[in-house]
Length: 282
Image (tube, rainbow, N blue to C red; front, side):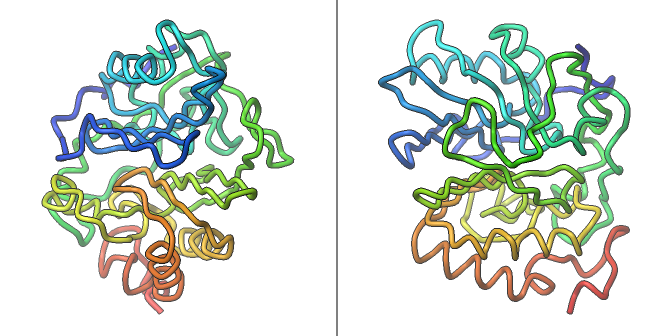
């Protein structure tokens, strides 16, 4: 297993870094610098899944918070990746080596997780803020998980994660998925939409809550992204845990997600950038 040669710690942090939120009895969201991971499962049964794998260099922190919640030497049954960008797989190799558990992702994401293909380059020219301008410094080369990565089943089920199904939500990446539990309408979004303006350094640091589309500097397909948001809005989720920003619930979620789905071109799509086609602004 290998990371790309450009993988390195990123000196970015928010006020909520190192903080966790128990959203439901079996859903815990923890912030690693600027990105969220999720621990899904029962504390009583020590039976859980890790969703996404944090920032580069964060493996010890993730292991520590996992053991704090589920007990010493605990380990997840599997790791589910919403997608393979560096801030969602930053500690994956160390975690797999430590826990010896399988990793699952959408089949269209596998080239980026088996060393075969790099994502489109980030766009520092995109409309946004300082974070967008610095995005050319972010790791972009593929990692290689070798035999440890597996495709999610085509039927929408998620191995070892009973009650949830995966939903293909491309745009931010080709194989991006969100995870949904129909019984209580719980949604783990990944970066299909976020609740912080991720391009703005001020918003990233303060975590000021604001529903937004996927991070602009790493999103090459805005048409697909809009369709993905519409798909998620149609589920009428009761709670949404996003890859960036604080969880959103209830009426605030319903109102904001409806607004985003209906007015995505104005709210989410940047006015300019190398991946922007102005037809998607309308």
